[in-house]
Length: 422
Image (cartoon, rainbow, N blue to C red):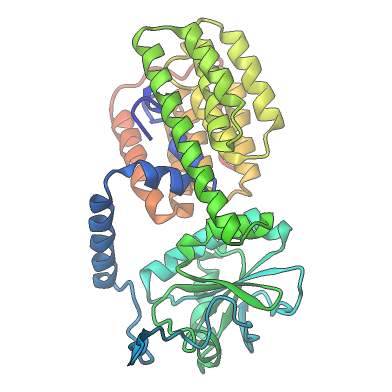
């Protein structure tokens, strides 16, 4: 996200409001948009290599458990590609899992379901970290046929206590099977020449659609659910991503120009246009920009009315959380804490109380009300739910709160009634 994006330029409360980059992260194309903007290919390749080395150093890969991919054979006609016995397009071997630490065996022959089988281990940090992301996918696509099954070769006696621990009891929201004799590993991982964890297999109607690291499967699932997972569908998705990036760049330039010239009326016009964009990420950013720009024009009641409409209609927890943080930004001299609390609580409920960022939004409201003890409790809850990439942001907010609590504080706002974390 460029520095000109609305969330990065709107005046903030002492606790930094939810960034609109969090909003973008909730949609499949977000990674494509961000990757497109990173910079030169050399920088990206260098970064990828650095992260790969770091992952291996930090127990990121399981030692090879079967021979590596055979080298190409060479004949008179030149090198011949050697493919693994199990690959994209192959029939899915039906996993035979006898021990279940959570949930039970699904019907892998059900043609109406999309199956994601993820091999992981509690001993491997990236594999553990994949569990939270997979739970989010289960929440987002479970009603549309996605069934996620985690498979580990660790014994039931080790995995069951882990899943009942405070950290993982709510974090893992899909079935976990134990494969101590590694028979399922031999069914899928070995013939696919896969030897690192985590590795996931996506299948539908008995055929394997995709194999890879589960961190990369979000876009694939989105296309499969939409019925466009094909060579043409993948091409269309890339074209859509490029077009969206182009529009986002144009919006950035217009927003920066309006802000530099303090043209708030022009900013409202741009926000309204952005809110009508076909891409849901840009459209939601436009709505939030509209609320902020109305406030900057002094049209506070219009801004609050628009926020009521959006919060009342949305089913997206990220939108409700972002509005809650926007309503308590410093640009609102007398913020409506009742509205902001309602938006934050709706974000928490829509997220099924599993998203750290939703609790951060509630902490924003509580901190603006001067209720720093309540805000600390909400951030503690957020830290329990946080994905690895969210922990640094939450820690920064917690440190800001601690420094505020150490300083003399004015009395809480008389009309403040911030909600407590559910």
